[in-house]
Image 1: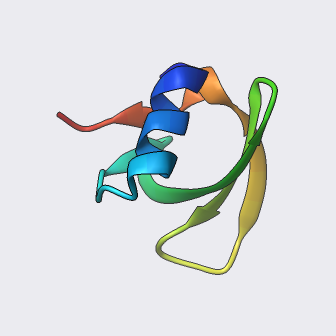
Image 2 (image 1 turned 90 degrees about the vertical axis):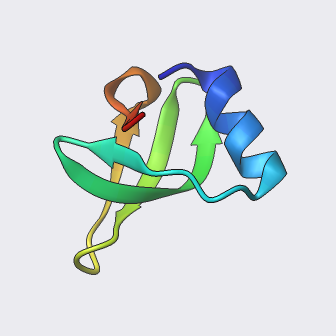
Amino acid sequence: MNRNRIYEIMENKEIRDIYYENRPVWVQEVNNDVAKIGFMDDQVEKDVFVEELYENE
C-alpha cells in the first residue's frame, strides 16, 4: 500500500479492510513512511512501514 492510499482511507473514514501479515489492523497515524497500527484481534500496537500494509480487495 502507499502513503497516499492510507491518507485517502483515513480522510474518508470509509470502512476498509487493511491487513498486516494476514491480520486485520487499523491505522492510528502515519509519519512519513511509517504507520502506527493496532491489531483488531488484540491490544498490540506496532510501527510498520506503509508498504507492508495491504487491502483485501
